[in-house]
Length: 215
View 1 (tube, one colour):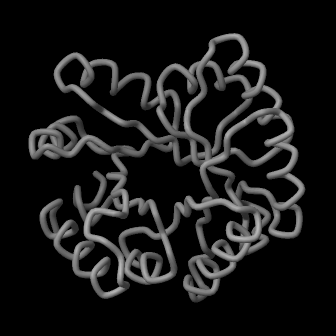
View 2 (view 1 turned 90 degrees about the vertical axis):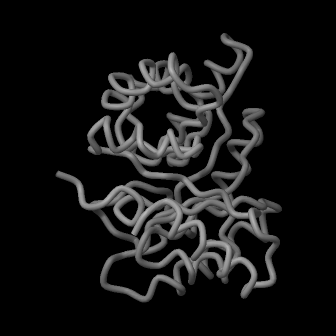
């Protein structure tokens, strides 16, 4: 697989789902990838990347930004409260807002800095104790709480359990988003993004299928 292959597959999937080609944002997940592979994807003109850890991203992306314009960086891994300010400065979009304490910190930083990254709320659709994310039954109240803090929520994100049919989780996320008036759906990875797009994904997160297996 390669970036070109994934873009071709994505375009076919968008068309089959009755979506406009290019309407789904492709996030190239570059976590733990060597710089040479990331640079190769940048050289092909791609600018939207996802990272799991603030610390790793802080060591990698300032250098790339001196060489490439227009990088749009997305945090797709759990965020510790003490790394929030660093994340605010580094990322244009955060997909893992999942608890009231973090929402309050975001709201305070937005007031202090005058800007805020685009925000997705992570929903733990599989009720998995080892995973981050607000529980589905608490999602409506949490969306309302974030809005009361003047946080503009773009959408919802989920990572389905590996041993369950992902489309069930994509459909659940879509229902929660729809009843809360949210249009963004961050869902679907290398192995299941076609299903996610068919169920309304606006952002897909693809790593190994673009970069190859991590070293």
